Length: 424
Image (cartoon, rainbow, N blue to C red):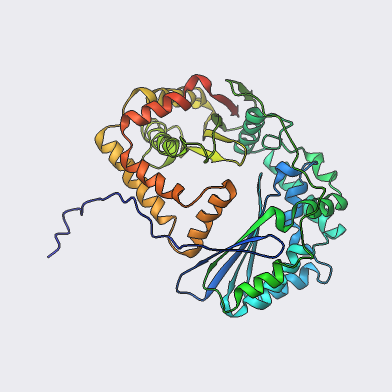
């Protein structure tokens, strides 16, 4: 008989049940990875281009090029594309980031062949119609204007500018008139230079139909679609690290947004796993020290968190929250106290075990199913890492001590090295 009054023992695992990807390389050089698994007859195809805002020479060009892919091709209008996607029960998702643009499609196995042909047309033959482009940019400009009145959005954008500099694409803060400077030829040139098989990889996950490799090769491996000879990655200079502060007054604001952090390493660095664990103790989950102090004990906010962001050429750490303007100074002081305590006050046995249990369960959950595993595998491909990266995290989590966490905080997260932006 199971005694349900007694909690079962918690065991930290160091092993992951991973789908072994099958790799292929098409005739034009495009790498394709297959992660077959799951029980439902559905699959996901994701094409990732190293074509984020880092590569653009004019603000918003990468963002607009990616998001306007489905606005029309040489043979189809936006309406026709949307009707066909609905007909095939296919969901197309486009995400433009600082380093990459991802174009993914979820589709039923039985509709894959037809939907995939449409997918290839959208990716390879966009025309970015003038009217569609202006309508899209005008709508985005309106969203931008609204965001300029939100303290949290302003804190984020000014913080990135402070960390990387206003001339670096990681730190550039979009201006309202930037939306009016984008021209159709900018999108066409950017697509030609960066949306090609020499600058991309493809990940297919789920239940593939028979002959999928031939279909993929026919649609994306055509030798007529190849890398141009003229495109070269731009070079930028980042700001150096160091303590800097900024206070942006917003008359009438009821809340203040606080963002504190610094430029840091990305996930290719040897200390990444320890930093992830250290950050989680500080503000990476509901039971973190920042939440216990600033939300539960002081009641200054509904939520506060800290995070590590990994970019291809850099990374950064930040703490973010919104508090009442009357307690902003007190909340900021408490944040710095918690940063100092992270390197001076060791995690107790129960605190450390709770942290490990949470991170272990959450990490394992992030690999649940072929689509989740494909997403985690995509991360590795973007950063040039192999599958051992994920297993190394679990090993580090099992072995890390309170002293290791304090040492890591002392090396990378000292309070006197932080940058600070307060808006409100």
